[in-house]
Length: 365
Image (cartoon, rainbow, N blue to C red; front, side, top):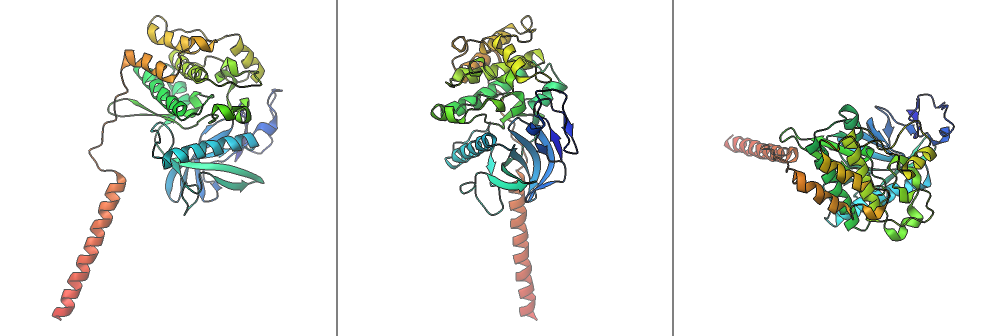
């Protein structure tokens, strides 16, 4: 277990975290579990990504590989995780879940998501809230950008188109995200065809407009990914344009290979000022992919009225140049679940045949 600063990302293995930056108080540094440690009956494999309000782990539960999301201590973080889990539960129970969002799993053995969308556990004197969701292959988009800052333009646009569908789905259910960033996106590339598959594993503020005044808190969003209209504003008036801005920032970053605004070793106030003054990194892709660069520039306009009206409009703009994301190629092999069912059925048949043969020998004897 180690402490990790949520602002500058310095770590300490002995819970004596010290940061030379005055804007990095040690009390904001949650404890992060490592390989082989446990939360209840859940064993940690590794942290996947550390967000400002939660950490997502790869883990095992009841011998099944899963993702575990644990809220950092604090009422606002806890409530945000609860809203997220309850939203996913409600959509699954209504059989209207999105393939771009996590598939919720029961948090305990012998329970159902209908009864328990999220779980609670004690760790080092803290009551932690968590939920489980299905494991899928892939890696955070942040890691992909770090490894390859200049992705193929088709991959860039297919990723953003898929994210736009995820955001449009949230809007269709009456909730806003308001905190999109590459840290919240898991991407897997098919071997054939070579197409990115996207999972938005963090649902942001997960609040409707009516509850936003009560639910909103700015810390969960990295300052460089906060829409300018949400900065220093006591009364949040959410609109689709704020989530379009988040999509635009991700597209912008995928194009130029670096965040539009600084991420590390800058105070939140410094970054907020850069956002309000529109001090983005230079758009360097106007010459080679001008049409996509212009879509990104429109989406990150400081004035919401000049952005695309919603995520669907942005998706349609990209679809006009790159077409729909190619469908997944179905495997010729049956799923593991199907194979296990067939094996179990064959074993049962073999057992019955053995009983019949044994009974036949007994009668003959």
